[in-house]
Length: 415
Image (cartoon, rainbow, N blue to C red):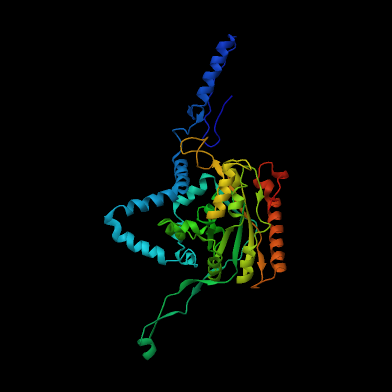
């Protein structure tokens, strides 16, 4: 019997058998030796499987990219305090702290100005997405919000010379983005532990977002608390990640940028477990109200098949300290997180890195919403109902394609 780990290249070992009989203890010893040889790609220490030394370089880079994302917050916090401890750097630190206190980009729509296609397209994000891999699959085409058009009749105006003498300098034809279509609110389900697929597929270009949906720049929304972390906030803003504050969302939509919202939020993260398709949606209607208030906006349901499979979950009892801690964090800090584990950097059995499990973000058909500020509860419920139906239909249409033995899988809206 050959035992291999699916996440690493397999090695074929050929054994020669003999026809004469041997004592049982010799047969047993030979089988043990054969098994040790066959398991040589994975070294074992105290029952734990370790990564082989001959892991291909591209897989090491993928692991490094995911490790970076996992530890980025403590790294940025540590970096700031190291800089703060060196008086030589205070000439930079003091102006930056003043800037932090005055700048409100994470909460006033400023993410649209900080959105950097160059930063989103760095190779590290391709490695990040290829680790799982994270893939994008569109079930329907979306009309671009912006279209590149060629401007041929432009000219440069020169102060005074243009106004006094009418002197103009014709400029060469150039390309300009012109708004030609609606913007979108992408609802992501499920949240999973930390919504890795949302970050990889929409927060970066690692899965080819702008190639699959050209002309639809999209900001991924997250908790405002993360933007209190020095330096890390600039990192998030460059990726187009922004806070989930309502006023901020309205300003971004009015700038004709689209939004991606993990609708179930922290509450839904507590439902994450391998094989689960439980989501929180029944009372989540704020994103529908946003679309009604801004107008020319379409709701797009998205289901992240496999998001709940990248971590193992430790579930505390209903009356346990762990469960109380989770709800206390959510109540007082606006977030919570399940107790989870998966693999490590050098082993496959325990750690905080996710498993290499494929995650596919499937986007559904757009639901156009009219411009109706202050819409009645009946109107909100109507479009929320259309969204729920579209999400269920999307799940049922693709569950057999993206869930192993998924013909009996069901989408459960638990609250």
